[in-house]
Image (cartoon, rainbow, N blue to C red):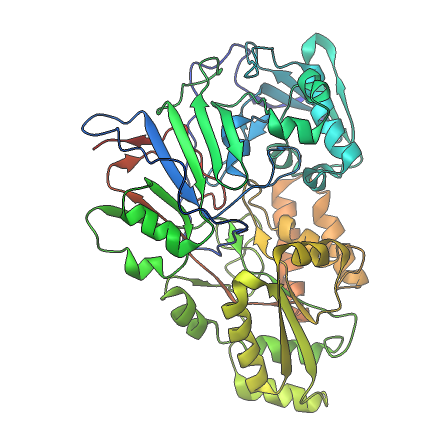
Length: 521
């Protein structure tokens, strides 16, 4: 509809950061954390906060970063705390929330206009301008940084009248607002002055509630509250994020009081840390699930009977008990989780039936079929559990537990594996279309199916929410019937904090929003 206003929050700077509305989301979800480095010492804890509210909080996390480039990362804590986007939509937000943009309207099916917030400044004191916004989008697209995947439909980003920004897409994009919430804005002049991404990582400048005062890829990040932030000032003046890749060391650091928050722990923390008066355990749906995809363009999974045999061979409840201490959730026959747009309660999970799996393999003359199951080394136990269940049905499974770099290369450029762990992330984009974009993606897609392509393309450009929801459900039913995905379970995202630490939402998976974090004691 031409000229239809989509959102309006006025043109004056907000007196405080908009509070996020939380929707009830059931269950727990898969934990995915890139663990690259280990440090058991270094930055101090925040013990100075005795009795009163602390001025310093220390977070330990198993999610590490090798560079501070907000244009080339996804779901990073440093992005959401030190940088800002035009809008933001996190778990439980019913619609995108205003950030560097206060108003926006959909001018046509493919053109959006954003009004920038007056008074927003970068940490170096320079104002956030339309030129900075245009530059950030274009730099992502020109350099093909990781976040280019979010804005693949964007045809152009330009300055409009009165300091507005216009984003034009190649085709209607119902997820544009959610996607641009992952596009963080950098100051054009500073980025160019320091020589681009590498120089920027050494001297980062954002516009978020915290500014980065130091960064070391072997130890972590230090933040200082930014007194020029456009919104509500952070509740705690200083925050230190320590990288502790070993989850056992991370748990020990929390128990000893070296850190106030332990982010992304192993599942065994559910047993070892629960029931204590001095520690709060957090298990929340984080928007991250397992997604194992079957390679249907080669034998043996080019035969739907063999694919259905693999699906029937998976006993998810037993894996939930063994690997997550009963805290995981069964993936219920569709890629999207309950609470994600496009999920249907009418779609049910194929039953675990080992006898039926064996019958299907015999019917397809595929008993003893040799298959490769590929994933990340951190998930070796999960991979081995799946492999043993497939072998019980009559497959002969080889496990490939790859280091993160190898897995990323396979994700981007393809693999000959018969089953591949893709993962399914909804952080910031709680929509079934997000994981469905993976099914036929890449240089060597696992699915080549005209009907699937038709179903996927139909929902991708439908702007009417009700019609699009039905199209997503149709796509889900087709994926289930064709057995393109091996349904396993969602693992709990486990974090913990010392008693007295409040104001942190652990339900956004790899991201911790820290500006409302407080510690009293």
